[in-house]
Length: 113
Image (cartoon, rainbow, N blue to C red; front, top):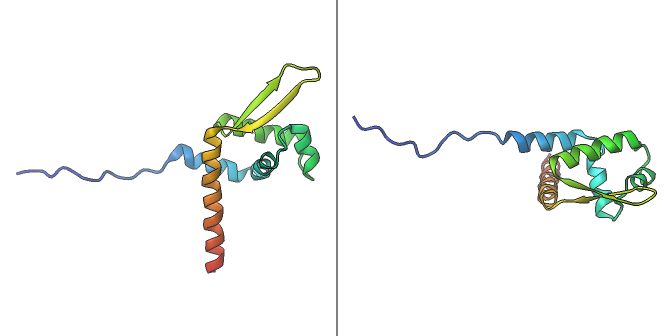
């Protein structure tokens, strides 16, 4: 008896990318940080001063998480006083496009309801 070769394998969830999206959306401040970076605010102190309710501790945790995922890159300048800036990486640019698409999908869903 001849067995047929399976043409389609079972589709698995993209665990790592799904966790990344969940973590970013779960972080209350990540989307705000992306808006700040997009508007040219890339220094942590400036970010804290620009947004009511954002603390240095919470911002640092948010920036660290985004840096670990490879969405943001931390640039340290060897100056006195020390200066640190954050920029979106090429991978981060792709990731932010996905977040924009999710936001568009949400608006469409809300429009249907």
